Every structure is written in C-alpha cells, then in structure tokens.
Length: 163
Image 1 (cartoon, rainbow, N blue to C red):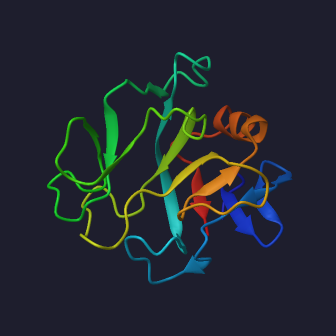
Image 2 (image 1 turned 135 degrees about the vertical axis):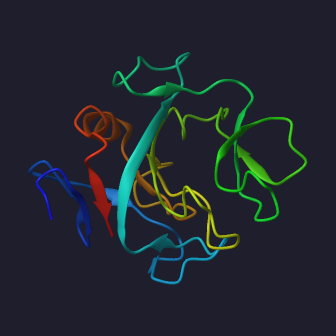
Image 3 (image 1 turned 90 degrees about the vertical axis):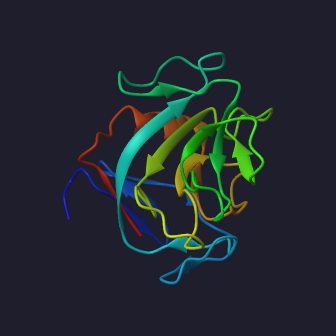
C-alpha cells in the first residue's frame, strides 16, 4: 500500500490523512462481481481517468476530460463497446454521462473490467457524488461533492482504489 492509495474501510474512504464518508453499492462488497448486481468489487483498482461537466463545474485537474451532450457509457455485454465511453445514439443499453441531475458532474474512472472487458463481469466502477449520505449506488463509490472535488484535485494515475 502507498500513501497515494484510497482505501475503503468500514468507516469511509481513507485518503491523504482523511477518512471521507462514502457510500458503496446496494449489493455490498463482492469478489464475484456481475453486471447488474449492484455490488462494489473487491480488489486494487487503478485510476484511469476523470470526467467533468464543463457547463457546471470548473476543470478540476489538467487531465480531466469534459463530458459532452452525447457521451454515454455502455453497460450492455452484447455491445462491442461494452464498458467504455461511447457516443449516442446507441441501440445497446447504456447510461448517459450528461445527466439532468448532478450525480456525474465529476466522475473518477477506475480500471474495473477495463480495458479488455469480460462481458457480464460488470461495467464501470466510478467514484462520483452521492445522491445523499447513506444512499447506496449501483456498485460505484459515492461521496459528498465537496469531498469528491478535494479527492479529485489530489489524485493521479499512480493512485489506486483498494476495496
């Protein structure tokens, strides 16, 4: 473990000397992740990117990529673009990254089931803002938007998420 790592603990996400309150997937933590199970997968996950809504927030880091109106994330195991960012329209099941709510105004991407996605093993595990404290995610890790921005401004590609 490194001082640059984020470590999920029973009391929150430990990072840079802080323990940040967070929520995890409605399915709890699992070592047998499957698409749609709502669980947060165990393991050591690398940080591979960051997305943000330029119409809502300032660019949090110089390596953050803006989310455009047609940006989507494929969550359909039959899609050749499964578990990657793509452009709408798509005939496959997907999630819009440019949401009406602020949930994805800032998204930290992990390497869960990426870059060579195994169909059905589960699509993206993001770190994003929570709906509200204690409200579970679909498998991602979520936190207060102020804490998320604080984390985003301090991580790099050497940072890992340890679950």
